[in-house]
Image (cartoon, rainbow, N blue to C red; front, side, top):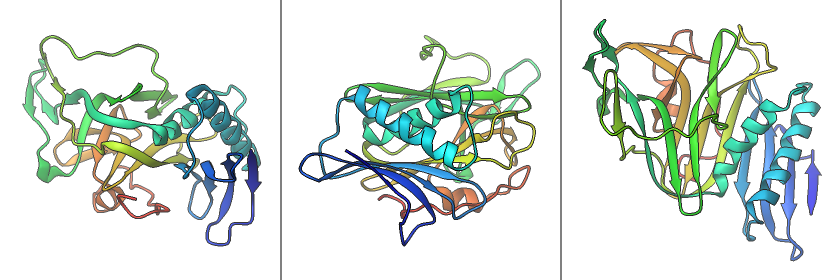
Length: 262
């Protein structure tokens, strides 16, 4: 059963709440409007989740309605599907992450010169895969005219190569939040210039039981120069870590609706 709730005293926005026949909360999709741009979220409830195809249909219907209610019509439907696919990570049990990491600096002949270190606080990837107990989720980037966002609707099934070459190296131990994902928050930046869609999916925050992880569409031009809305998936521990870093152009800050790890 679905309820569209517009009067939420502690939050500025609107959401859909799904309950089972015992009136237990099962799934909630919300659009937070308290910042410069809408932030979509999905969270588990206490009740058991429905089968994936039903959960996907529920989420897409809610996202489409919340986009339209914000005056952001998705005529093609791709933004709705992409946001929904990101939000569905909140229904996953992740056993590990893998992907291909980009070098921070390379020679003109594509030989890597420098890789990210833990002290850098951010690591760029060409793509990432969340390996789950019942399904995997592939994360890449997509292009909207002059800018790039995060894509959760891959067009090809990327796999780790047999051997590393050039500016990419395989990683099977990416330190992202694992275990049960309880909530996902998706930034739809409606202020980005250079795109044709009503907004760009620029950041996604994953909440686990004990930690969180932030994914951001950006690219390293050197160890100290990072550009937003660019061609890699950048991994950070949380939003506060991204707030403390200088980006080109300057990043618009937003506040998660939950503390890290919740």
